[in-house]
Image (tube, rainbow, N blue to C red; front, side, top):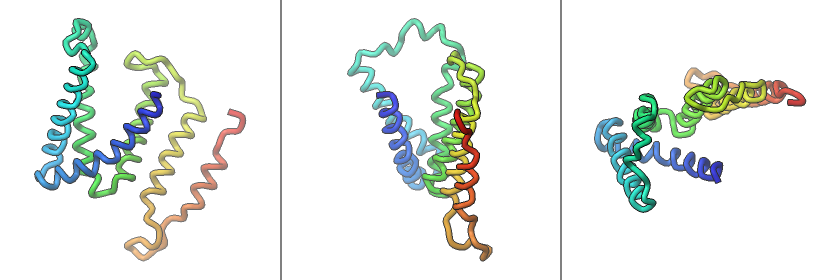
Length: 171
């Protein structure tokens, strides 16, 4: 269920970037777009809390470390960046760059067991998965045909061959 919800959430992030870009264009500011997005999100979460009798003011919240309160800042930054970047580079490239950043941070967090996570050391296979995301980003950036300088775009066949040859055997 967790993976299915993550896939649905990822699909919604792809839709969120261009819808927030529309808000940013209309308001003249990606920050205003992010504010509107978070306002609507806050109302939706308030409704979910009310519907599920969640504990908004749980006493245990007094004991979480200070950095646990920064999640909203990270989300606000991403939403504003997405509203700014989606119309400039496209949703696919934007989200691939975001996923590459997420995976790089995730590898470090997992490897060292930071922020209370269980340790999951970086292996060659996990590092290769990260490299594949970077290669995928290059494919998404490659528009095919000729570049503006009149030269042929980078071939997409060569990175695939290199990537396939780099797969660790027996891991």
